[in-house]
Length: 287
Image (cartoon, rainbow, N blue to C red; front, side, top):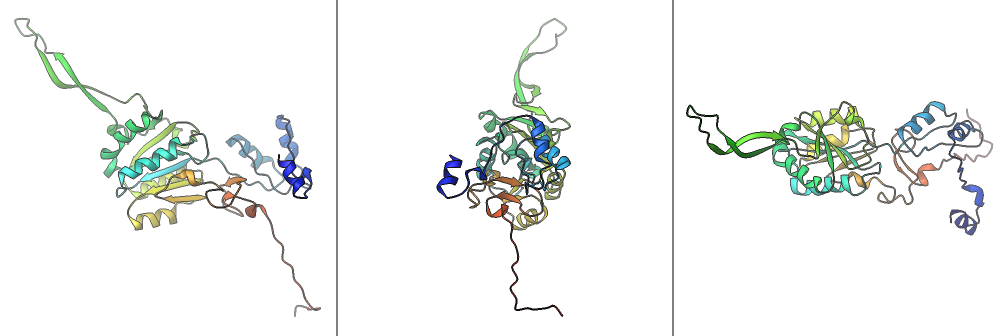
């Protein structure tokens, strides 16, 4: 189909080629063809990106690896916040702009976190909860129990006492590497933070610079988040799922660049073109 479109447009069909040999040695060969290839855009896992960065003799645009965050600020509207989180996590969990970590301000954690977990659990989401989030997720259950035997050996049944606490089946304590993991599945990291500063610091430490957002009604917090979070796409009150060439008006997307130079974020044809300066004179000389 692609070759037919090229031919119909008067372009050489071989302008787009496919190397269908899965041998990794072909990648090594390609990375050395600097006289024929202008730029490399690896599409695959983190190991492929790292291999290209370390072995290429050609400029490499890396992207597509996304550890994406949303921060629920203390001023966020919680009902629509649930819809944004649901979309960011569940619409297409295997893509690079799906949500990986949710940060919740402590001021709203008690009102929001348990209901969020209950709702998303019905959608098949499981959770890796930081120790800061665990106290908000324990479920206390009540039941009947026997009192210790009295002197005459009698025991009585009492009801309504708190006899235990447990985490929901969908929740596990977070492991040491969980906040540095791109889940690509229905897994969501949870952490409670005490401030915008702590949320920004967590994102700076764990984000891959792909897509990160804040849910807030506080304009100053929104502006500060946009200013200080150094990611290719930064969101205010929107799902990270919008990081896409078509959604951004760029047409067909080639990749999501998470580097800082040349092209950053969704890349269409314009972002892959170069330019030249043309100087026309009348035998001018520089004095």
